[in-house]
Amino acid sequence: MSRSFDVVVIGAGPAGYIAAIRAAQYGKKVACIDEWKNRDGGNAFGGTCLNAGCIPSKALLESSELFYRTKHEFKKHGIKTGKIELDLATMQKRRASIVRQFTGGIAGLLKANKIEGLVGHGRLLAKNNIEFTSISGDVEIIEAMNVILAPGSTPIEIPIANFDHKNIVDSWDALEFDHVPERLGVVGAGVIGLEIGSIWSRLGSEVTILEAMDDFLFMADQDITRIAANDFKKQGLDIRLGANVTEAEVSKNGVEVSYGDKDGIQSIEVDKLVVAVGRRPYTDNLFSNDVGIQLDERGFIIVDDECRTCIKNVYAIGDCVRGPMLAHKGSEEGVMAADLIAGQAAEVNYDIIPSVIYTSPEIAWVGKTEAEVKALGQPYKVGSFPFAASGRAKAMEQTSGMTKIISSKYDDEILGVHIVGPMAGELIAEAVLAMEFSASTEDIQRTIHAHPSLAEAIHEASLSVDNRALNFPNK
Ligand code: FAD
Ligand code: NAD
Image 1 (cartoon, rainbow, N blue to C red):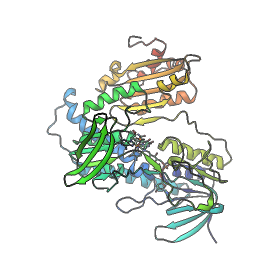
Image 2: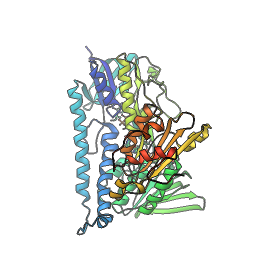
Image 3: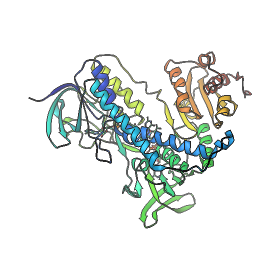
């Protein structure tokens, strides 16, 4: 007799494992299938985020920033050091150990919630049956009352620069380099390009980032990106905009990269080339053709606002569906899908999803940019505050950047908050919470912020919206 479950989740990334845990919390009998294989050959839960994305990249961003600051800032604080040397092997060991702890933690969480964690491939068949192929090749048909598809995404490969995973690499390869490339090329100045470029630049690589678009970080507020671009330049990141890569050829000296820009055809030679031009939904062999799951023209599984596919009791969540490819967005969709399966009301507020880029300075935002508000034709007001006027930022020797708040002129509701500066990724949480409660600028103005704290920069920006900033001259 085949095994049956109330809920079967395919994929144990931040979307899938969270959905499984939430469903189990309702007393549902849950299985979660995942086939992730690490480069040492071992299987692990946690998906891209824990194994090859959010967690390992942040571990290296932290280590490389410490290395950089020790070299460049300690003197200012009056700290004398000997020769600062890099021990990349230890740095990489630390990264791998953090990943192991966290992926092991997911296995523990599944167990603690009595979820059957199945290692292998899951494929949706008709009538909500799942074909499960274990890593040893055994095939089992599992019956599921409800199915949640959470297969995630994979890097986009461009034909002019196919991955050989040695010279032309993806972001996962680039997080596992065992030496610092002297010259690193990156295709794409998106989130991955900037984070990976920052890591290796701080550790000593000469980094060139080629970006096809003329605008830098077009999705972020332009006041913020202007400051970030300036800082990245000072750090030595060579970001070339309007650069269309036409060829990448592996040679004995590395990779010859040709690109076209407004001045014609250019070329650079690098030791390694990271291609980071976006990710595509990963739905390979995820369902049989007779199931009827529909994909859009870019390969995303089509779902409604509640992540329901067109098949009854089959949901899809995370990177494989529309919306930003972010771990926290996928997790919230996982919570929503499980709540709906349990008969509860649930929704995801897609208008209020924070974005963070973990460079130095960090960049974070939520809600609309000024350009987006302007395009809507809605009367608005803007306030801002520079970290240069923040006592805490000064003490931290991290004064570059600003906070910016955009509010409605009609009713004072906050429409967008944008930060570039120290701990922007932490500071944005206040703005997310405020916007979730439809807060007005005045609500933040009348909220007491500790002194001296970086959060005061949000408070002062809110005051500045109405020309009432207290620690900086108003417009
Ligand atoms: P995934 O995490 O990709 O997990 C999907 C899982 O499903 C995988 O384990 C896969 O093996 C498994 N799977 C797929 N198909 C099958 C199948 N048929 N059978 C069994 N198993 C299957 N986001 C952030 O929010 N913050 C960050 O700081 C951040 N940093 C990132 C850094 C990098 C370098 C990268 C690449 C991404 C980063 N992201 C970040 C994005 C984030 O990793 C993704 O948005 C997130 O992992 C998506 O979660 P998911 O559960 O949808 O998919
Ligand atoms: P992205 O969409 O952020 O950036 C890709 C960049 O590549 C874009 O700027 C695009 O214009 C450029 N590009 C595309 N084709 C090109 C070409 N042929 N030549 C030159 N440039 C080209 O994608 P990504 O950086 O690969 O990241 C993938 C996803 O992972 C993103 O959706 C992101 O949300 C997620 N991620 C998030 C974080 C975070 O939250 N901190 C970190 C890393 C990744």
